[in-house]
Length: 419
Image 1: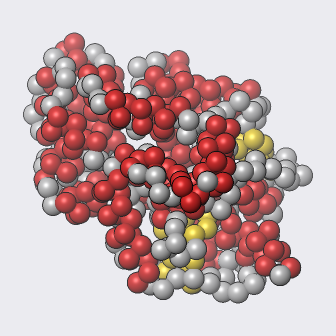
Image 2: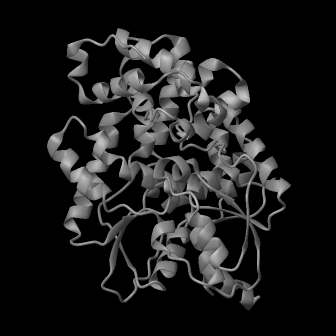
């Protein structure tokens, strides 16, 4: 593509990177088949190719974007299936990130939208506050399940999760191999048992988890809403906690969506050389759970048919397809391929709250595909997918670490054997 940015505009490293990706796009359309919103809606403006045209115009012209541009950029899930499919190596993430930051700066949203986004970035990113809200939702579940709109969606998510009251308790292994653990935000509130299972699984492999004191949310929720200053603040906090902790073999956060964002920290600080260097050192240490948990033959209480839901962040962000399946198979289970496994389930961080209709349609499509393979259980490595797909109409859903822990005689297996 030809672009018409001024030299002054290109002095901004973030915008310069976006411009390089705009020039790389040849509008071939291969990306459209991998885009969930285009597959679902059939609107060219809801395809990567269509959005790229609108984003280019918006960024070149500067100032307030058109309502049409805001609508279709907001509808993007950031699943990055288009980036994986692109034969021209267009890094769509750099484009959508810059577009969202521009919209956040120059577009005035409605009061309802501003309040919802404030709630997402202020309440959901703080586990203590979120935990209190989850507890209330569970206590008043008959009412919470009937609340309308976006508030109702959040309340129903809280009610369907298996936990939300207790705090994460990490049992450290007696090992010199230290792994820094970021507990994050929503997973720590919604499902603290996940990181407890992670700790047990990795302890059997000689790895000791050390929670990073002072690190909070990874910042992905703020980043994907275009709130760059907030995202940087969370990133600095995580990097500083890592630097205070001493020598670590790796950094782990057991939600793939968060792990993908941690690895992207250097791009976040493209305009701050000193922080970019520190972010690069941090990001180089980030490893997904599926990489740290080496395959280990097990004798599970019973062999399960497992539908493995590969999060988009795993496939297209971390680019680790195949890791989870290998672990599940080694643990003694049958791995089932979910039809249309490349399409997003509709979670996408805060997307399932902000885009109710599209997220709901993608969830229904994903569950239909899951049920077609008749699994005993659905397994994912991302809390976003788990919370979005969970419900009375869904099969049981576990984190990959929970399945491995159960297969290796951990907490779930012990509870089952005691009944």
